[in-house]
Structure formats: C-alpha cells, structure tokens
Length: 398
Image 1 (cartoon, rainbow, N blue to C red):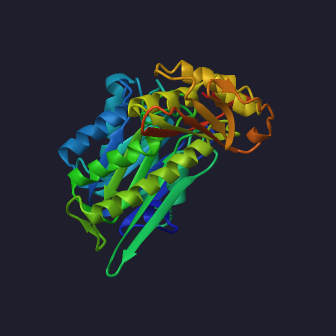
Image 2: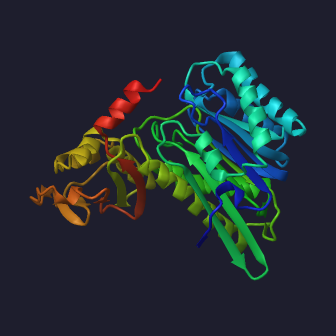
Image 3: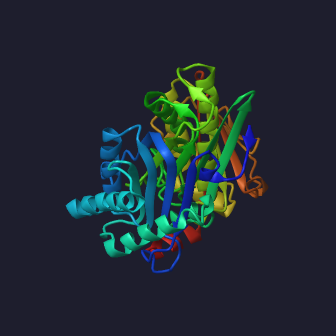
C-alpha cells in the first residue's frame, strides 16, 4: 500500500486549514475547515452514547437531507457544545449557516463537529470570527496539518495520514485527520476523524464500507473505558478520480482495504497519544466458543484498572490478567486457558508458570495473548496503561 503526504488535501479537489479564533484561552488553534470543490457523497458514524452532542444532531439532519451534496466540514475544539439544550442545537446550526454564507454555498452542504468541554454554550461571536478567518485562510494556507491542529484538545501530536492507489489508468487517493487522547472506548472513542477521498462511490456502499472499517479499527481501541458524547467519523467522497466503485466487487475490496488502513493508522495514533500513556497493549483473544465471548474477555482485560496500572508499574502481577478473564462473564475452562505476555507463557493448565521477571514489561508495546482453547473465534483490542499523568491531565482539564 502506497503511503503519501498531504493528509486530507492529498485527494483531488480538497482544501483544508485551521485557525485560532479565541475559543481556547491558550490561544492555540481551535477551528478547522475542510472543503471540496465539488459536492461529495458522505459516510458517517457517530457515538452510540445516548447523550449526543448538538453538532451530531445537526449533522445527522443535514446528511438525511443531502447525502450526496456535502461540500465540507467545519469543526471547533475547546467546547463540545454538548448538554447545551435548544440553544446548543441552534448554535450548531448557526455554525453551519455562517460557513455556508461565507463560502456562498447552498444550505445543507456543510457538516459540523465539536470537541472539548461539555456543558458550556459556544461563544458565537468568537465562532463567527473564526469561520470568517477560516474562509479567508483556506486558499492561502491550504494545510491538512493546520486543520488537524484545529481539532486537538489534550492531544500532544497532530494525527494525519494519506494513501494512494494506482493500477493502470485507474487511481484514487484517501486521506484523514483525527483527534483523540482520552475518553477512548468503543463504540466509538472520544474522537473525531475526517476522511477525504477522490474515489467515486455510492452513498450505500460508502457507508457499508465505513461501518465495516470502523468496527475493525476505532471500535478496537480503548484508553480509559469512557465513551464520549461527540464521537464522529465523516468520509467525504467527491468522485474526482478515475476510480469508481459501483458494486461489492474487487474495486469495493480495494477501497475498503485503503479505508481500513487509513482509519487504523488514525486509531493507533490516538492510542499511542493517549493521555499520560507510557505503554500500548494489544490484547489478542483466540479460540473462543463465540465471537461475543472473545470480545468480552478482550475488553475486560483492556479496561481493567489493575491491569493498566500493572503495565505502568512494569510490575508482573499476572494474577490481575487472570482475574479479569475470570470476571468477564464468559464460561472459561481454567485447565484449557493459556496466557502469554510478549511471547512468554505465564499461565497454562490452571497454573502460573512461575515467571516473575518484570523485564517483559519494559517495552512500550506489550502483547497479551489469551487462548481459551474452546472454539474458533478471535478478537483483539488495543489498550494503554494508566499513569500518574493521566490523573493529573484529567484532574486539571477545564
């Protein structure tokens, strides 16, 4: 697979930028705009949290009204516009309308997203200033990185990626930016991810591919087990390339493969940039009787605070992993269970092996392999440790 530079502006016909409007008192960038020079088909996946933020409600309305005529995305960070009542919904609509007005676009052509502090109204005079600034800058400061910076909250790194597919006379590009650092837990995670592509694909096929790719990427990550109210993934496909997906054939699989790789890269960037993270753990559960059993065991280990602190302390308290498995609600046969950490067997046939050295926890990347030996189903999830810095960051976040 051919990785290229450019992020969301790598595909033909897309521009992007980010600015500091003043929403964040720090003076850091807090607004972003992505714009296509022609209408796009949109794919979207949102948080499953019952308390959905105002921009999600508004974007869902826009997609329902105009699923193949979207021209761009406007987003802000520093304020989630969530649990803000009718005023919050009005403000999200105003963000859309102002962007459309400044760009001279028809109604229902801009999507909206927000991330940040919950429960505060957006400062709309500042937001309008930011939108006008975005529109002025997007042609002269066309940058995926600036847009990525504009949606960061507690992130420490810009998250962007892009790929290109070429075969004969056919080619397409796909790019993405994302944000996310804490409150990461399926489904999905506290995160925003905006994807652009110049492939041509129908609304139905795009959303089917997106759902499949999200399940295999964003729904496999967790930092702290908390689910956000603002999680959003948008895919804008403007059809400017020579590559067209008409049905679920080989071309669909090629597009899905590139979409999955794009989302997976952003997902791993989010985990690796998790708040206070010093360790990233991949939990593999194999040979479960049912897929749901494999999911339960993997997620139980991934979200166990005792396992997370064990990883941070590099302390080989292996009983914490076994206890998490045993409390997962899955019917486990201890005599068939095998657990390995970084390829070292620590438990099998109902007994600890007796390996108590902590050097296998020194690496930043830790792999925990769990073999239930009960069936043929498997599942994996990425998790992190829990550090002093995580507590400090979230205790002070206002």
